[in-house]
Length: 249
Image (cartoon, rainbow, N blue to C red; front, side):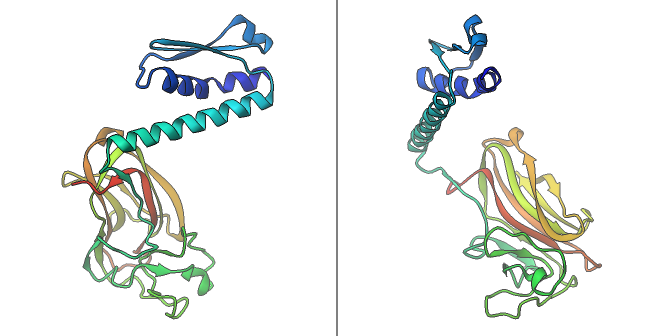
């Protein structure tokens, strides 16, 4: 139980900091001499000091449950303090509302289902849900022909609605072409491109992350770019989310 208790210190520090002094900046969790015998952990923060005993798996599970409840309560309080802030993500399950197109590359988007698999491409899209952005695909409805392609010829851009960055990370699924000079996803803050990602020359999308801690509190948007008609010059994209909020101007 010693190793389990030690690895659990970080969670306890968070839990008791929230419980005793929300916003405490000087938090530490130290093992007491007794803790090496499985008896206790002392968690200290501004204006509070708590000793917690973790001797059995049941007690650890109980503590974890308390942490989850405390974090949920804290999230509710934060939301109440900021009624116009709502977490958001873009997964294209309800279409492209608010997204703006240029050119023709994204005229047939979003794509329904695993269209590459429908044409036996051997590279499943691995999209989230039923709908996603498939730059070379041509299946804009359930009734459309499975596996149909528009190819790499069309070019254009697709820009998201604006959102506010409220934390350290933005995540998304991306695939398709791998020449970042020609096809990519861009994060734009204050009219400047601050992050870029592209695919791996494979229709299968994989999860990527942008570290955005330097832009917390700033308004941003994501733009998908297809500036080439060369082979494998298209972008696949889905499930944009993370530490972003919508409904703010």
